[in-house]
Length: 304
Image (cartoon, rainbow, N blue to C red; front, side, top):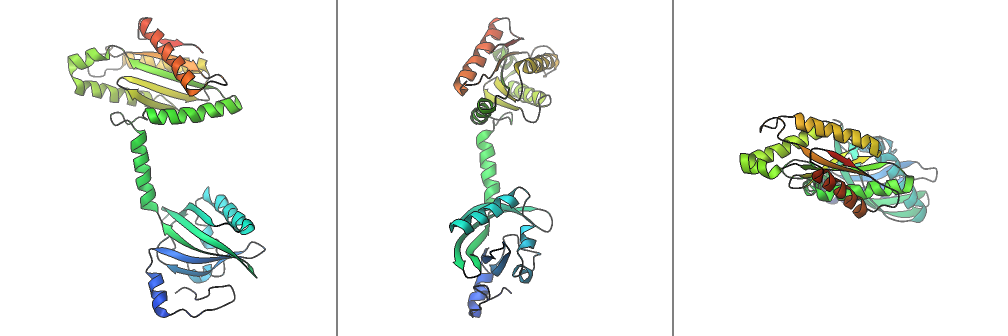
């Protein structure tokens, strides 16, 4: 059972029916107390959930460290900084963090708490709620909105968002960045001869083939139809050209089920220059792809 303490060192009698009701809550009502020297403990905890299984609430009444030790490693310093800032400025805590269960699974927790200065330090009164299912659903919807249904690659929306981020880094720090655009040659004839189902299979195989060659930090996206783009962070144009030639050769040598050598790609490449916007970079790589198409197809054209 939780302590009835509502302030450190003070006791208030709470009716049993209210204690029973608190224990049935799908979250956790809490008091968190911080002494001037930074010691944290929970004078009051009530409710179920929020990843507190396996923690002795009587221990937490004296020391919050066992609960803090369950925080995901990246979240621990962030949460401690939030608590420190709240104590200094008397501002509410409103954040989320990941808490490790006894079986090592992670749960997402949302916390809202209001601070109050007391003689013995700072006292927060708040609520913790397990929002894991909500976060999983949000992640699923986010992936759906960023993913091409046919190939499982990123879609144009995802590419543009990531491209904006990488251009910002490149502009600030002068980091190399390249962009590649691929287009299947004579793809309409594949659909006309073999049917759209086979054409879709070719696109899926092409995506898998390229993904097997690209690095984890690279982003390949389907822009639409038979056109693809590859974002290559930290990659100068000379290296991206070598990669493009490797992709082109691997694709032309692969049997996509329509006869070896029948599927080829034209590829355009450009490198980012400090000050380039996303639109300028996209226009330039599109011009390089256009040059590859009109230069005979099944070739790579580069140029900054």
